[in-house]
Length: 203
Image 1 (tube, one colour):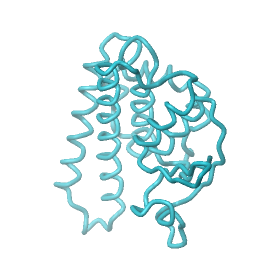
Image 2 (image 1 turned 120 degrees about the vertical axis):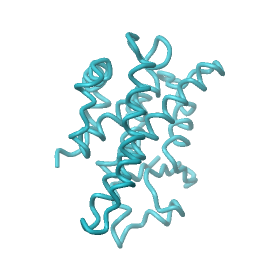
Image 3 (image 1 turned 90 degrees about the horizontal axis):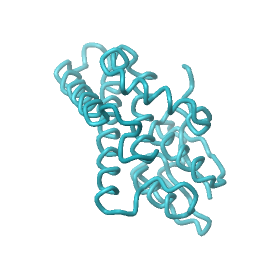
């Protein structure tokens, strides 16, 4: 099994954390899909990472598809509940966290454009998505230990990756100040070996 991914990608990180939690061995191939010489489109026609290459050379792409496959590939530490209601709740958390990450990435990409070509309206719109997602995540987490149910799950992994991406790319987002329960969750997650080992580059 091979994983084509990038060190700074929060979606790649989510998959790497699941692989670590499931104790699945794999070959890690670092690729930058923005590089003109990238080979990512050979494995994913959309040209996006992460991509998981199975032993029979079947390719899986989109982090949500990959993590679902991985959770069923090994019985170790189930991260997506079998019960329908609990499973949907966990996937809802994942969608919320990934949506927050999508909006953050949109802001980052826009701010990389020349100043006179940036759309302030677009940035404000995406920032609104981030702010609303953080508020809902905090409200729904409340005083609970974990995001969904009584156990660590994919919901926590997705939220942890989203918060880590905000720290890396949009450090001015004051989520730690505004949502202390999310900060507490992040601190707990960041002590897990899977999070430590997959931490994005400092620069």
